[in-house]
Length: 399
Image (spheres, rainbow, N blue to C red):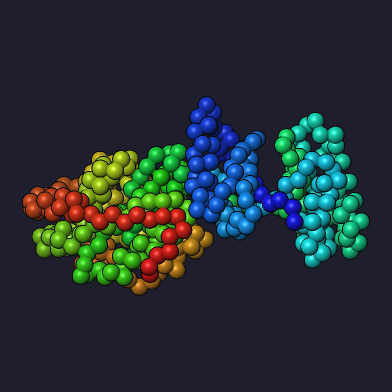
């Protein structure tokens, strides 16, 4: 079997960057190396908007390597490829050895060639024609279909070697994690907040998570569920920290001292203030929430305006214009949906008033908080006593 490599293409948004393009490429290479580190030694090098991943010893798990790097943000297309010398006879032999078995199970095929090495003696149409003729001579049942082939064979002639592979498949896209800054994601146990984290990490943000737990109203299983979601998200965002806030006392205090219709907005403001304190200590530059406009009473325009006014960091809401079916579709695609629908309560769903106010004013919210002088101290204590749980790529959750 020929030497196999993984080829990653980052054409698209990254290639449009100007003088800072090197920063994005370095961030991408760093993410790739980190994902592969525990699998063994791989050589990662790039040329002409393409990254090549080469195993440095036999027996490395190429299937797992492929799966991991396909989830690295910044990669647009990905494929497994066989590497060989640029001699055309070697290319023919490699194509048959690597893809011959696949050709036996189809009726039509097509050859595409990309000649990055312009000094190569054959041009792209000649490569396609001659390799196609060779494969037809080995597989008499085949015919060429240039419009709708069952399999497409790609040949890339690079400066250092030739590569033969099947069609490239879609990868994660977006921008490399960490190239757009750092943020703290408010991670509940629901469907929305994991999707929000995914969407913002795809735009290049490095993320940590913060979760609010209110035992005994929320259970250990609810906390483990959120930890499982953080593990699932680490496949995309990388290593992170889950901050778990002991929120029982501030939440009870708000319940006991606030007007019931304002409870949810007051609680959300309290959570953002605590999140701000944790973010400021850890160098986070923004907060992320999974709110979608008008989805529930606390996500109306008036309620969101009151919530944002509680603290100073930017609040990023990537789901603000999505409906629930769109959010669920992304959740299924990234693998968090099944965990999100496990029936364990989070603290946002307890003490919910039967008739929350949908159009609160900042004046009445601040007036209500003025009657809760003990809340600030409880929030500070909760921020000081936060539990830190390290989440590593590939970690299996205990859930």
